[in-house]
Length: 114
Image (cartoon, rainbow, N blue to C red; front, side, top):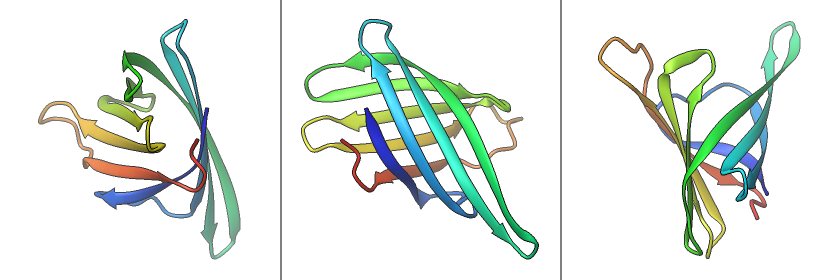
């Protein structure tokens, strides 16, 4: 299990403050990410919540790598990488194909990930 918040290091930075919890199961080869964001604007605040599914493609003592597809933009691949020895995690959002109108971005998990 991982938790914290995504901090953008490249590409699009979504507005607001976010929190994330990721649970992976070696037996099923799946990870679930629960993502919540509070968006501040002139008329108040909105809470946005989403769940992302990942399929584990590699899980060793050194690394956990899982991929998924963004639910509302199926032309975007999600690539989650967790470096297990140091407890760091990153997420890349990568557009597939020239007709995908999405900017690639990369984030690092900040807070208390492991």
